[in-house]
Length: 363
Image (cartoon, rainbow, N blue to C red):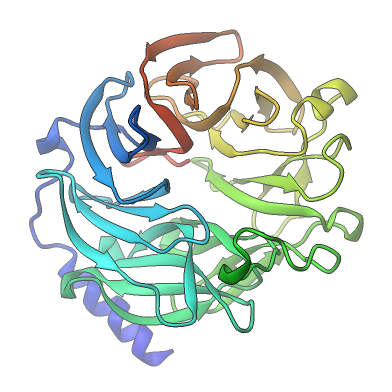
């Protein structure tokens, strides 16, 4: 642990070196992976109004990306169980580093930066034990792996950096093994949790669903300006059961599970694919590609409205108000409590996540 602290301290000093930033690249606001018309895959940079700014080919289906906080650089992750994590120089479109999970590990599709952007944290599975790990990679030394910490559970998926380099980890609770693809091996005993960790591996706080909701796999996270965390869940039981799919949490307090009427609960088909707060932190949205819905809630966990859109999934904080959303049919949408407006239609099939770039946007 002492070695990790030394790395973090040194990395903070190194992170002040001048870099080519996102502004020099034309100010992209979002990153999103997509399937191209010819069946290939790419990572795309989008403006605040969803205009295409750049396209970088990927070797396979992408899931999410981690945008560096200052440099025009992103790490694109494969879909779980991932075999690639590529560091991409978004200025020239080239892959600058290829990250290989250590033997006996695989990636889970998400990552974030700490230490001012000099350490990349990746969610991983330790295959033999089934326990979650957070890999630590030192950017200034060519993304050399410098260690790992426990994720606090099984199946860590999404990860966010919060204030003071606290890490929030969505431990989905589902054990998998690469030899069995995406099969879920422990549904009877799964125990998902939301864990708050220090960057050197200390467990600060942990939140678990009630025992009767142990099939609610915590998958994706978003943070509001005041530090409130939203977590999106995917139900591993009967998809027609009207279970909550959105939780809200502030450290030191119990989690609040959002509630809605029977019809709207069932319409999501037990699956929340992405989650985001609006810029004010007043509203939070979850999407369901399986249900073809996006639902907006207030901070009390009450449903405000629901919009229909086939294969809706990627969602992020809107540049000015509301949210920006993508779907698997090539659409991008501006979403508010009052309406959903089409921005652009393309021949791309957008994947699950829309990643916001820049300070003040968390998704």
